[in-house]
Amino acid sequence: MGNDAAPRPGYDHWVSFRGQGLLADPVLYENGKEAAVPGYVTDLLNERALQFVARRREKPFALFLAHKAVHPDVQQKQDGTIDLASMRGYMLPPRHENLYRDGVYPPRPNVLPLERILKQKPAWKEVFALREQPESRPFLEGLQSGTQEEIRRRAAMMASVDEGVGMLLEELARQKTLDKTFILFLGDNGFFFGEHGLGAERRFAYEEGIRTAFFARYPKLIKPGTVIAPMVLALDIAPTLIELGGGKPGGQIQGSSFKRLLRGDRKGWRKSFLIEYYNESAWPWIVGMSYKAVRTERAKLIHWVHKEGVDEVYDLDADPYEITNVIRKPAYGRVRERLYGELRKLVAEAAGL
Image 1 (cartoon, rainbow, N blue to C red):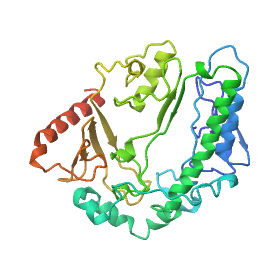
Image 2 (tube, rainbow, N blue to C red):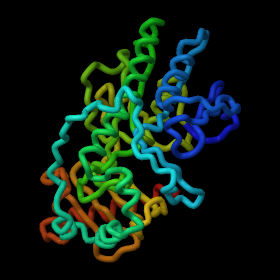
Image 3 (cartoon, rainbow, N blue to C red):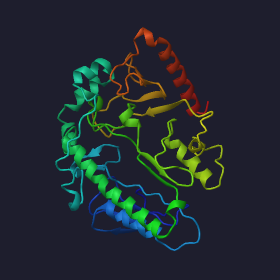
Image 4 (tube, rainbow, N blue to C red):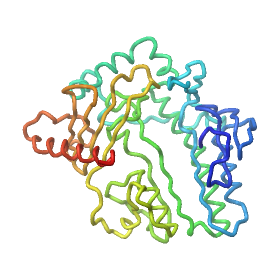
């Protein structure tokens, strides 16, 4: 959901929350009208979505439901920095406050001491040092970053989203349209809970950051339990939905419809993709961390744009947790050069060259 009050072109119903935060007692915009509605915004959006799906209609509909969960309740200033005065952390509805209270989430193998991480990932030396400065601590401590409580509260926030999904599925089943409705459940990014020494950072090219939830339900095309091995990207959502709706993606549409992958047709599918990030000011400790990266089915190269001699290469087959940077190992010389060549090609394509 966005934060603008005006109705959106092409939408017959638009509900959004105001600002970056306001999970509790939010101000909602509905078709351009502002109204303060006490409650928990995830529950409110679930209810509005359910009301929309339950409407009587003659034509097919499309619903885009984007929850603020699992973000912390904090607002971002116009310059992109975090307003610490607004920090309320991870807000849960009272019924979920004790959910997973005794849960323990075992760390992944790449949750390691910082000194060991820096031997393989020297690009992070300045970031790790700045994160320990007094001006960085209030934000990290407000999130309970790196603790079991952070993981627990984020997981508990997802329970409200899960309830909303169940409500929508039940309504579609009641209407006898569930199996005729294409449902896509996804997230916009991954997250780090100490992997590679990171958290609350989330926009970086390691697997925990770039892999997201991506589940589809459409019995007419997708058998239960189907797993698509080829690399599918967020860019592929638009052309897929256009094709399923009977249209043809225009030349301006990036990505590829993955409908054919559901039939087992992998011919000509991508063998690599570009990942890039431009430094921002949300966190005071993120300095000069812009990167361009390429991932293939076997390996990954991360090129740090503003740093010299600290690029990273990982053999994803042998090292799926990206613990060992092999960029300087002679045995990976050809792999390294191929990855740099592929990265140059993808960057040029992205720029329209």
